[in-house]
Image 1 (tube, one colour):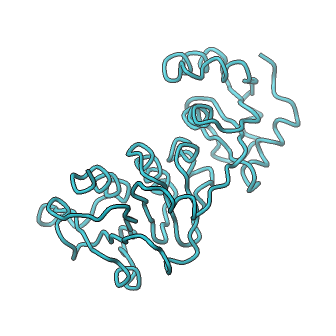
Image 2 (spheres, helix red, strand yellow; image 1 turned 60 degrees about the vertical axis):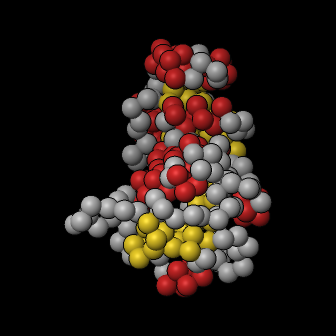
Length: 247
């Protein structure tokens, strides 16, 4: 296995801030990028044996591709990528960022998840991950959150390559039924949700904004035990996507 070059190291560093590139943080992100057809420019690993073990056990379908393109990186070079870039798998990569549009996502016949002004990168990544697992049409985000930043990539395990994600400038003009997930809504276990919905989720602290709730065609709530005020955002997304109301 060849060692990374100074140019490779520059590529890894630049992918943290370059909007055309995606820093693949950990083996699972690299694995999913390869599995879902990403244009991968570099795979770097701290241990050839560990990469081979991970690839053989977790991604035999792309093991040959990953091991053939991988280059070795030592600890001092990992530190040069940036602070907090260590990962237990010892694998990192760079891919070209796919360009998804809001129109592409809304054209899907499947449910679409809308995250209104999400704040926590790990939660955003987990929402993308469960949305991809459920086979939904995509994830839209309002506000300033970047679904391609390294912390979100890590939280999603790189599944931004499996399902389209995009930022939405305004909720006005969405030509699909908007289903607001709200504590004042109908019980989702008995609700009948219309076809092709946009499922809107607010933050755990603030919930959905009044304008979005007023725009909604329907509100649904998750039944909870008395005294329990909320669940993690990604848990809520998963419950709704896998609920019988959408089946």
